[in-house]
Image (tube, rainbow, N blue to C red; front, side):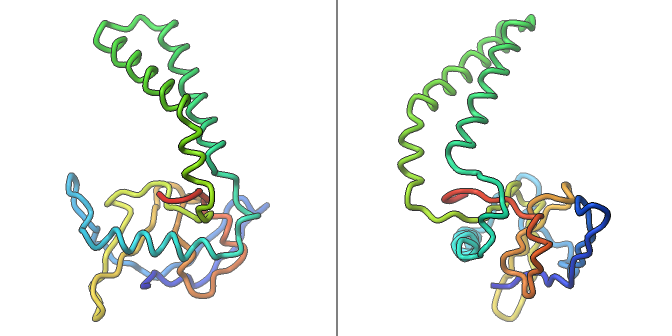
Length: 181
């Protein structure tokens, strides 16, 4: 699997920030604004996530299993309920929020299905902002090479698992997820 080379990482200060030295991946995005991903992207993404599940970094990454996402669902629902009570919404917006809250309730009531589907799936790192602007492509002799990145968040979700010579200090730049993206 092709990837951008990682030339090194230098921590700065108390380790909260640092410099990650990467190969230039070019500027060709996988798709333009409003376009969808190419069909051969799906097998590549599956391969990326499956190969990342074998990396020995799980205990250095935050828990991001079904319980964590259920907590986000509950917090979002609570915030929407408070907003609905506090704000003076016009009818179309109030109706939209009420429909979202119904969806949240149904989702939470059926969360056990999500939890069951995740059981037995490997823990893996996922790209937490997967959209065309964060995937570059390079044309190689073997075909298209997909190069995931995200410069919006310096300590964000770069796909380091496939980089040769991954330095242990750089694993702080990765997010962990459960199952599939």
